[in-house]
Image (cartoon, rainbow, N blue to C red):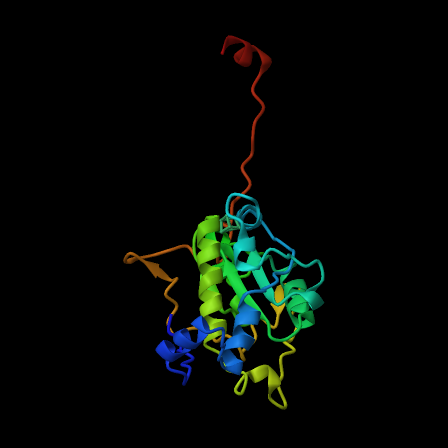
Length: 244
Ligand code: SF4
């Protein structure tokens, strides 16, 4: 993952020397990002088995509090990180987008686990979304089924790097005309309408899912049922069945 380093114009050696004399010189970007990355509050919700790993990351053994991210908020209005942990069904997807819309800016998304990234083992199912990034922008993808708590912590550190690379002067959430209300899909009789948000996701030109290791994989398309002729069944006589 590529990030632009947010370079300070202060000579690091000079800054360290001054710090020893109790003189602190910093930049607004540094202190603004330091405050944000040290207090990332995730939203308290989980969708499936990956959520158990997320809960384990918050417990004593892994202790997500070391990163200042232990305050899982029950309200989206108090959270700035959405960890999509688990299978996103098409029934649940509109609610996930609605919750994301209700979060305050600046906000970030971690797609945790194969299901949230791409549909995972249920990608061929009729009722599972093939990745939450079809409707909301994802900052960090964490593969695995399920990813262990250490991997979630690694993803959180990657997110902190991204926050560090941002500048208060160019932050998009302070720009005029920012549009961060994402359209909420509706569940119709044939799945979600629309199927994806073209502003955040476009279907690839070639469907790499069609072939896998050189042979075509099942795509879940319905095949026509065979036209079976009714077969007359003659009841067997009681004597013959008793002899058998
Ligand atoms: S990626 Fe695996 S562990 Fe995570 S929600 Fe999907 S099936 Fe469960």
